[in-house]
Amino acid sequence: MPIPTSDLVLIDTCLWVPFFNRPQSDEKRAIDLLLDDDRVALIGPVLTEVLIGFRRDEHADWVASVLRGVRFVEVLWDDWRAAAKIGRRLAAGHHTLPVSDLVLAAVAIRRGIAVYSTDPHFNLIAELKRFTP
Image: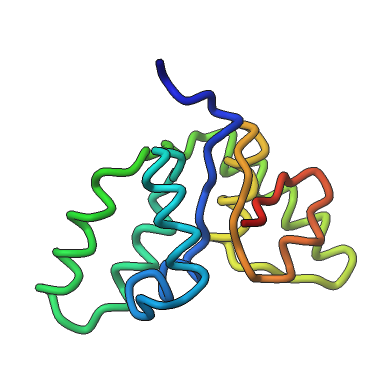
């Protein structure tokens, strides 16, 4: 039986770093549990940010092969527009978020997927569902 979209979790770039680099971290343990339950979702901008973080192609290729097994959620035209709308709303309140985070939020809202991140700026997006281990 497929996992309902509402049970999926989009993991932000800031949590993939400890997952791959700190094997004893709380973040690694939490993501491992989500992976075991097939609940992890990924979008292209996050994948790109994660892979940019590796200096050597061999490491990036290995990480890409690991991440290839998670659910990949396509970013649609309407997601890019929604991300811009969220960005404009936040900018009016003097908050600027990276485009990748705006897109992550837009996709999560459209699909009803929770976001796992330690970045406090996601707290500025009230309609965003958050995952807490």
